[in-house]
Length: 64
Image (tube, rainbow, N blue to C red; front, side, top):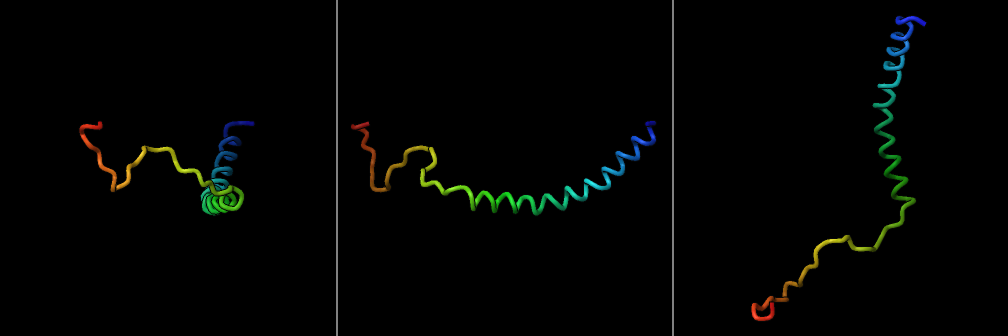
């Protein structure tokens, strides 16, 4: 195999797989999203974050 054969193979693969990958990325993202929604169970756990006070709660300087 000489260098021209290798270059022809590289160009052929690029001409074939770049458009296929571009077109496939659109429907692959939709497919992944649909699989995630149907198979993964929704979680009722609240995300970790800071504790929040209610609006009616007030901080008093003598108790802090």
